[in-house]
Image 1: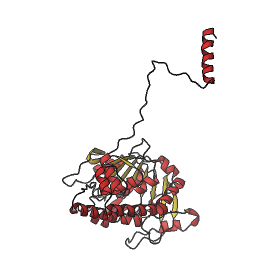
Image 2 (image 1 turned 90 degrees about the vertical axis):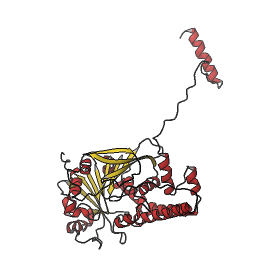
Image 3 (image 1 turned 135 degrees about the horizontal axis):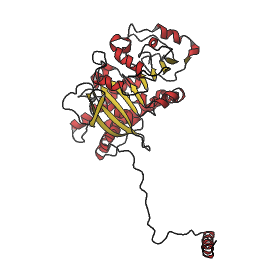
Image 4 (image 1 turned 135 degrees about the vertical axis):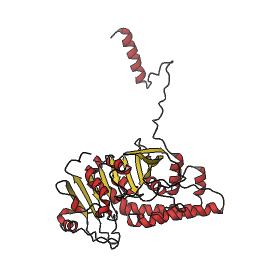
Length: 395
């Protein structure tokens, strides 16, 4: 080591021994690294979603409405109901999914939830790692509400809206599914204005931030067009839909939830229709089906049934979905959960003797620690996970 270098090193060591560290050169420039920006937030819709979810808002106008007795009572009741569901249904569901759906969840980037309606809770809890969720139902998209703070009429509107929204969610809270005729009476323009408020409420209550809300239409085969959301002045021609982009706080991963208003009976859902071509090319890995009114046991819902069987790598369903007999053991590996019960009296001619026989073997059936489906009275629920053995057929 050269003498000059030895002298400099000795001086530095002496300074460190005395508790001093060498400072930056006098001409050094201080560099401040800005925090990494997170995903964009749709502040207006996210705030409205907070408000109808019974959660504290940042928007000044909505904070004023939070002081009303109607909102206070609504928020308290929703907090109580949500906590009960977390303990009885969603907590056990989340733990069960971690134990039983590991392979399916890891493989699932896009989840198809036919007949799911506005249920954004079940798919996001069971498959939290998916990037895209695709739901559909007969109910129209609608819009998030607007509220004012002045006058008796505004106060009545707020009270009525929150009461109607509570009623619209009551079947799902108590039974785990929506009843179509009740949704038809409640999710209308004079009451809750479609499924969008329910979807946003569920996303907020499961801890998400809304990044964007977009309108969706099918204009050419196999493609969905997305553009800024605007409430239409006229009724859209089915199928059409909405896309909600959302994320968990503290993450950069933005997910997408699509809801499409459509009729998928064979008469409207042929292989040459825009929506069929879109789903056929979607590339979903898993289909989730529950509380589906046994529709796919009827011949006039054959196209959606066959599409699910042809394109899915995994199918998680209850007994109201694709008939058990169509899952050939040569193509599908089956796991059975829960306890078989005869279909409820509202549905006739949909018994499945082969499924009943499969459940009669206790060694082949695993426990199901939560309730899901039509047997909310007896708590005798069926859930089946099918894993494809054979490759998906070429398009």
